[in-house]
Length: 171
Image 1 (cartoon, rainbow, N blue to C red):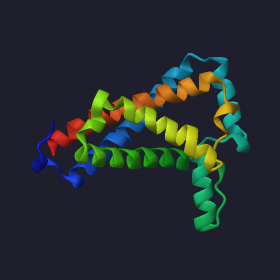
Image 2 (cartoon, one colour):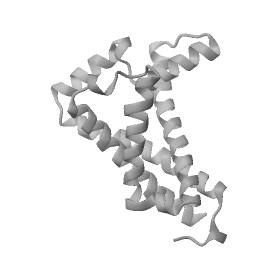
Image 3 (tube, one colour):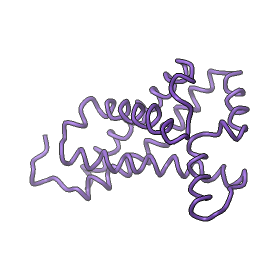
Image 4 (cartoon, rainbow, N blue to C red):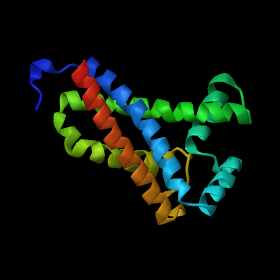
């Protein structure tokens, strides 16, 4: 348990941002690894992503922002760049919130960030994305897709906590 005098919102946020960015990268690597076992499933995923209606939520988000803010429809090349930018921005933002929460209430780091990853999956993937029209509802996907998403977010949560903790100690 941290002493109250050692707590710092800004240090927590900074450590959380670094943790969130690294965790986003780790999540990407994990997903690549997971899909490497899929064979035909991986090819099917790539074909699905090429269909505009089934683009990843990160690309849909980037497209919506570009159209609303700049009045510009993204090209395919711009989508290739902005989709990952949205992924890392969301990871950094979630990490910042997590880092701040860890400073205020250290118990949120219980079980090395795994509950954070699970909650992030439920709130964002299963809740916010369908509500915002950026993904289909949870019942539209097979259980294997939910397992993949949950496992990916558990990796995210664990990595975010390990990195956040190391960076926070260094600060």
